[in-house]
Structure formats: C-alpha cells, structure tokens
Length: 159
Ligand SMILES: [Zn+2]
Image (tube, rainbow, N blue to C red; front, side, top):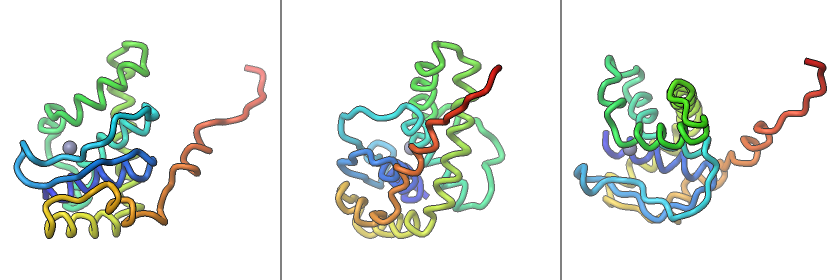
C-alpha cells in the first residue's frame, strides 16, 4: 500500500514535469517522494499532494470510509497550505480547491494506472528509485502540455 501511495505522488509529479530526486518506500520516516527545490504551478502541486491518496483509493477501488486520516495527513496540510495561498487566505475556498485537487488526482491516477502499477512494483523490489527511473517509466505520458493548454481560456462575452 505504501508503494502505491508513493507511486501515486511520483507519477503525478512526473506528469506535471516536476523534477523528482528520489522516491522511497519503507517506514513512515523513510518513505516519501522527494522533489528538487523548484518553481511549480500551485494547482499542479496541489494535485500531486493528493496523488498518494488517489493511488491508494484506486487500489482499493473505493474511497476510504472516513476522511479523518487524510484530513490529518501531511499531504493534506501541504495541499491546503498552497491552496490557502492561491485563495488569498480564504479557508473555505482553500478547502474547495483541495477537494478539486483530490478529484483531479483521481483523474490522473486513472489515466496512468498501468504506470503506477509498474512503479509500485519497482519500488517494492528496489526500495527506492531515482527521479530518472520514474521519468523513464512514464516518459511517453507527459500530460503537462495538454494540461496547461486547458488552463488558459479565451472568452469574449459581455458579462
Ligand atoms: Zn503522501
């Protein structure tokens, strides 16, 4: 389960073109997906924070019966911190944005499920993987461009 959690984060980070240094499985203290210091899109980051939860949810094909663990997790705290920043400090808007991130992470996980599966097994086998290895696994599935194209909309309407 830990492997899938970390694979979910890693695939999401890679999907958005974030530079990953290393991903590790193991105990709570050891495990994690370490990304390089870099400037990233806030919305992409929020989705990547939700990627671990999304992968585990997908593994069990169902949402956890309670949100309590997720709400108390560091992943949620990270996503919320960035969401609050984007939301000009409004906690209600930030909560909604994290919810959006959760759903988008589900979408990314569904789309890249075979890659998550592969990565989780590689993690199980090796314990840790370099960012380069993660990149190779999902190379042909970089969705960043299409994703970004969707961010800008042209409207000319009198409102
Ligand atoms: Zn996590």
